[in-house]
Length: 473
Ligand code: AMP
Ligand code: ZN
Image 1 (cartoon, rainbow, N blue to C red):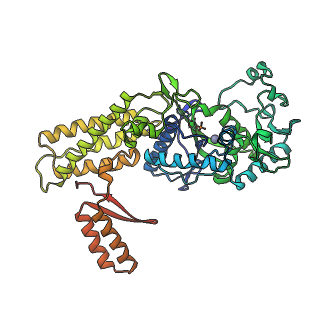
Image 2 (image 1 turned 30 degrees about the horizontal axis):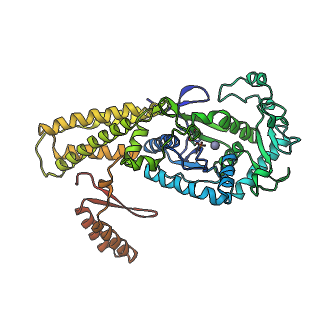
Image 3 (image 1 turned 90 degrees about the vertical axis):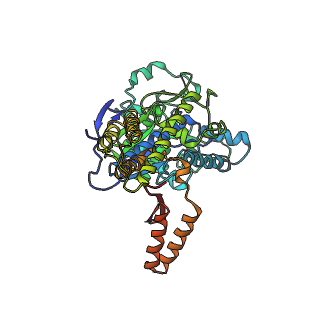
């Protein structure tokens, strides 16, 4: 089966064909956190899904260039800073740091770039894009001094959300602050500065003001990834109006198709309702850790259900995650023991079938439930073989290699397994020094010593990387 994803735009499962079929990286943009408070685990469901997507693409041999923006200026951040009586940048900084900390706890791979909307480079880009939209008649400077996108002039508006514009018209003007708009669905590109914004404002051809939320993402994605990108993700609540508006703005400026594949994850729920800050029914990563769970357990609990299926968060679910991981840990420990025994007797059970089954399941629109099903089926079978002493050291090593490969995507190895002993770190440091002195003989000796302790050392661009060798425990 080819690699395929469900594209929100077509509402169909489509074969994945990157924009550039040569070896150049896939361009992926993911809407990041709005840093007005600590992100909750509902937000992290979206980020964990995006992490799974990136890792699977990489497992399939693609290089991925991923940008995740940080929304550090919008209505909520400004309100928060005002209430806390601190400058906006100071207010948002604490939540940016918290976000990176929590993402690390959940083992989410860092994006290549984390642009912040308040960076002058992107503010300039937003102003440039808005000017182009005005010159093309796609935006207008209203009497209230704000600039709005004119949705009537963009016939494709509503394509992503499958939204009928006439419905919008029939609602009429619903709020007095929409008074200056030509159409109730027109959205703000540039908001004229008002008292409540305090000193949060930038100069523009339309007077002092600040950007609307939607233009921030169009500016940051086109500035860093160019006019056209392969994959754009977010939670389903981003589809309308945010992503719809992004399409209108970006395509309005460039005249080119903005995104090839739109992928959206369903919500994390609590008692059947969306987990949301506004409903007060949320938990943060530290809340979950405070209950005695680990980041790995939470990662598993968030990743194990298909991204397009709503997932109800419960403590029971956390306990199930804990049990599943314990089974994986025990299985790996047994395999390592068997693999470590020289010339252990037994017959070979080949991991050939699950190798392809796991990856093929993920090829099918990231069908993680099926992929994990194969993992646990394999665990059952191999445990049975080990119970009956029917597994030789070579096969156990092959299973461990298989785990190593699928763990590139899952990243669920236990902390204890990943902890590098001080002795190994010291030897790796000595080897690094030997390499600097070009003493290759000594460097090789040290590699062997590290290897004898059960670790592999690989020289990456940013320094040596240590990984536990399969077959050692
Ligand atoms: P925000 O910080 O509100 O802009 O949201 C950041 C990301 O989290 C977006 O992609 C949202 O769609 C996503 N998100 C928000 N709430 C949930 C939830 N309960 N479940 C899954 N994703 C969510
Ligand atoms: Zn966005």
